[in-house]
Amino acid sequence: MREIPGRRRRLLSRRSDGSSEPVGAALTFATEWQWPVLPGVAPDPRRPGRCGCPDPECTVPGAHPFDPGLLAASTDARMVRWWWTNRPAAPIVLATGGRAPCAVSLPALAAARALEALDRVGMRLGPVVASPTRWAILVKPYSMEQLGELLYAKDYVPGSLRFHGEGGYLALPPSATGAGPIRWERAPLPGSASPWVPDVEAVVDAVVEALTRTGVSAPEL
Image 1 (cartoon, rainbow, N blue to C red):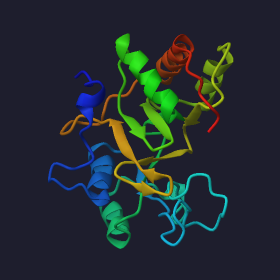
Image 2: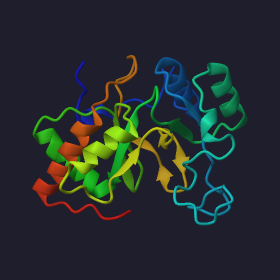
Image 3: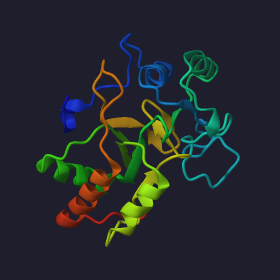
Image 4: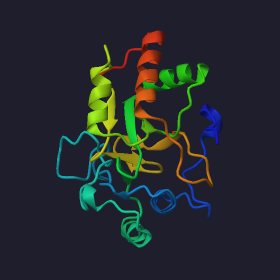
């Protein structure tokens, strides 16, 4: 089934039962799509924009695992429901790689322009996760060896590209983080099996080409 581009596909962060709460989305990811998830650290309500973890210099406030740790990520419905029953506002953190997608992320402005360029040439993309500062394109799982070979073969890769692979994580909608809300820029189609995602090589090739062709700089963020 073809993914519907752009503005016409801002659909899913709710389950078929109509719930738009984090627990409903977390259960969809874990049980229907078999993506291992766990609760993230919530933002510190006393200090806007700051993380609830002990690190005062945290660079991803509210959008990372802390307790439990990343290895606890699960697809078990009872575990997921227990976590969000006890922490109903906790961000949803995806453990990338393995059975779950990986991701390629870049600064939001450069990402928006790159996606517009990719739409014009008919490049097929899967879901895209957006925060106020960065967008992440979900891709098929890849190994560090595959990623290393891909990057080595490139003459140029923007330094602001980040790769969320095996052992990494990514906050998913509908999460509230210290950097702002997490939303779908390109939502998965509702009511379907685990969403289709492209190969990492296709995404990196297309993003680098689009940024180069449109003259968009991707600042280090």
